[in-house]
Amino acid sequence: MCLTNVFGQGFLHRDGQRIVDGGGKNVLLRGLGLGGWMVQEGYMLKTQPFASPQHVIKQKIEDVIGKENTAEFYEAYLKNGITKRDIDSLAAWGFNSVRLPMHYNLYTPAIEDEKNGDITWLEKGFKMTDDVLKWCEAKNIYLILDLHAAPGGQGKDAAISDYDESKPSLWESDANQKKMIAFWKKIAERYKDHPWIGAYDIINEPNWNFTGTNKNGCDEKQNGPLKDLMVSVTKAIRDVDKNHLIFIEGNCWGNNYSGVFPLWDDNMGLSFHKYWNYNDTASVQQFLDYREMLNVPIWLGESGENSNVWFTDAIALVESHNIGWAFWPMKKIANTAGVTSVNITEDYKALLNYWKDGGEKQSIEAAKTTLMQIAENYKMENLSINKDVIDAMFRQVYTKQTLPYANHELPGKIIASAYDLGQHNYAYFDTDFINYHVATGKERTPWNTGHVMRNDGVDLQACSDKHTNGFSVTDIKDGEWLVFTVYVKKAGHYSVHARVASENSNGILHLETEANTRSKAVSVPNTGGLNSWKTIEMSNVNLQEGAQKIKVVFDKGDFNLNYLEIK
Image (cartoon, rainbow, N blue to C red; front, side, top):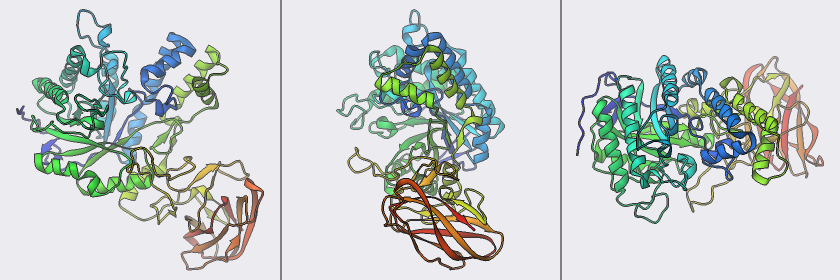
């Protein structure tokens, strides 16, 4: 079966194995998924595991502040979650596409709320989509529409699709499937003439066991219901829209395509998702084979949630094969592994503790204030921007050059956690720097003991010592090192005062410069503990005038470092 079409020349479309624009130019999509906005997932809000799907999170909130206040919270949350400033920021950072994960319930009611089997529409979701499209178009960014939470829920990994096992799923309800088909036809009718809609990603991660034993559909051989539904959705789209590229996804978090081929449309691409595995050609070979066999484009529709080294390696890998990508997500609370972080509050921590363990319940007024502040913190102007992540996703993919993370003018202080931006083995060396999850499927390799401030292998911790930026380097191992770009006002011999903390006297460190000078090594004494700070001195360190790089080498580790003061 082939649903042929003639696409408009201004639209992204398939040209054999490539995605091209209206002029036939190859387009390498570099995108970000706006996860957590239209579809909340518990791990993004720190409510996992006691509240993972959105409907459970919402019920937890209603239990403490009531339905009316909950509606007010969600109104603020959705208003602040993605704005023009967010899209402008993504464009400035280098993204040329956005993947919008949609929850069907912003566009159409649940089937149990419809009358006589009717399908009605809600303007809210369409207005939100219109706004994002307008902001994207202004910045020449392609918007890819992704049905992340289908009617009834499409996967056993419930948080992803807001699946409620007490109600009929997408696969157990003809009404839900009809609603999904109607949803995509409505979307296509509305956006058929918009070339900055890059593609329709018609179903995200349909994790379901139709005939197999794995609950997420990883051992399915036929995937008959999935293919049938995707064919029906494609037909509904093509009834009104001959222009737009359509992405499909396999079962098992998007990757099990058994039984899905042959394809049925000539303007289609395959999406696959990649998390925690190795960044070698073997990790994507199956999809390279599909691309060759079917003569269609492939797209890394979702990836991320790892270390900066993994990000750089993954993007370098797929781009070397002309595969575009969309990383995940845009915003999470207290997040180092994304482009931004939503700042957590002490009151919100207390609310999380109440939900998790019980104890004293906040008053309705106090809990509402807590939640409305979190909604306020979702505004772009209130976020923390993880510039190290952005640097790893773009600049570091193509250069080994390091850049200063902060201004270090000497004489003065070098804050240890503000080491250079750059690749592992160039900006820093750490013994465990990447997160794999490949051997047993249950355990992940340890790579960072801190998970604060930055997303490199360097282990950082909160620090309350004087003259700190709030973080210090910790869990230092033998042979690790850090590089700092500094500016020395005047050449000369300087003394270096290192602020250290240790519970033993094992540590040793020294400095090296680009001028091939090396300081004498200095021992780190037992300061009384890893949070008891003391200053030690390295004397007669020769520094040249001007911009240069200094390497701090940990000959022996097992201590913490706050800063170096150059006098």
